[in-house]
Amino acid sequence: MTNLTLAQSYLVKAQKRLKALAVLLAEEAYSDVVREAQEIVELALKGMLRAVGVDPPRWHDVGGTLLEVADRFAAEVRLTLPELATISRRLRREREFAFCGDEDFIPTAEYSREHGQQAFADAERVVAWASRVIPPPGG
Image (cartoon, rainbow, N blue to C red; front, side, top):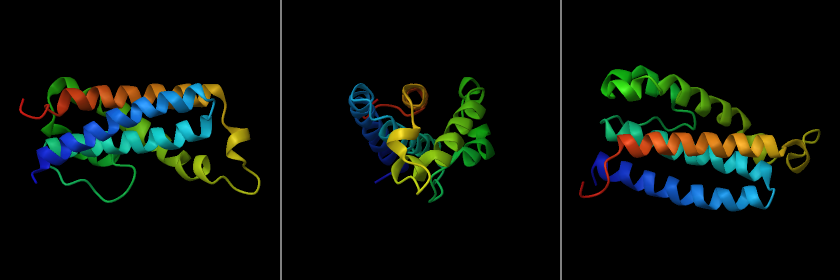
């Protein structure tokens, strides 16, 4: 399996999960939207890294790595990398709280429609950019 084949696989997974994310948003499962959006963003960004020949680190927020290897991306993509890295960092911070919460942080009570909508929009944006970087299979 090549880096490109794996990148394409990550993108397909992210695109399919984005469809499921719309269902969670419609069901008002906002904490789940935040958690799943993080995973979608992680897959898409790791796919972008693989598409340019970089083996992504084995942690959840790879935004810093994107910025470190920015020169491997086309100019139009480089302009968006700081925004994509910010999205990755923000969702990474929310990952555990959105999933498990804490004694004084109940995820189903703490996350609002606005949180869910923002996480969904962020995931859509990252997947859209990943789709521009990662060529389709056979393409």
